[in-house]
Image (tube, rainbow, N blue to C red):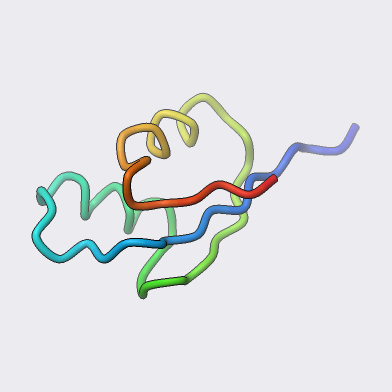
Length: 60
């Protein structure tokens, strides 16, 4: 059974955001603007994405 993956892209700068939101973006493996990360589809990752949904775009 194949694990489901989510492709996450940072589409808005983290400059001026809350420190815990910056830490969440780093935790997702995103560094620069337009950087991508392919992550496992788990409840923890979904929660992190929801917390910073105004900064990221989810593909797939």
